[in-house]
Length: 228
Image 1 (spheres, rainbow, N blue to C red):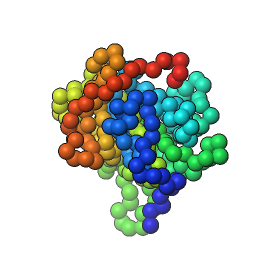
Image 2 (tube, helix red, strand yellow):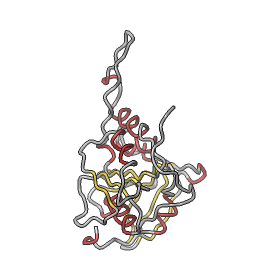
Image 3 (spheres, helix red, strand yellow):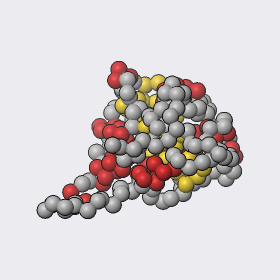
C-alpha cells in the first residue's frame, strides 16, 4: 500500500497567494499538485517564493525548496536548498515540524531539479537501464513519487515570451520541463504579464476539463522586492 504523508486537511481549504485571482484559479488545496510556468527572468518567475512567503506570513507552515531563499524568511517558512531533491526528501519534509506544526503547503521552485531515486535491484534477466527512459520520463516519475496529503506548488520557466494563444506542445519540445509539468500537475497555468497590474493566464490542463485551454486575466500587482 502506498503511504500518504502529512496532516489531513479540509479538502475545500485553499492556500492563500498574494493575488486572490490566482488563489481561486490555482486551487491550492488538499493533495493538489499545481504547476505554474512563467518566462525566465520575469517577476512572475518568482511566483513560488512569493506564494511561500505570503502563506507563511499568514500563519501557514510552509516548506520551500529553492536555490534562492528570501533574505528574511518568516518564522513559519522552512527552506530546503538541496540542489537536486528526491521524492523521498520531499515526502519526508511533510513530516517536519515548523514552529511545532506540520507543514500545510510545499513549494518547489524549478521543479526540474528533482532527481529520480536510485532504482531497486532487479531480480530478473532485464536489469534496469536508465538510458531506456528519456530525461522527461525520469522527471515525470520523480514527481509522481511525491505523495503527500498537502498541496504542492511546482514552478518552472520558459525562455521565450509564453504564447498563450497556442497549446504548449505547439511551441515547446516534448521533454521540456513545462511539458512534463502538464502530465503531473492539474492545474498547470502558463502566465505572462500584459499590464503593470495584471497577467494573462492560460489553463494548459485543469482537473475541470471544461476549463482546459481557457484564458483568464488576473489582477497581479508586482510585490515589493524587499519583501521577498
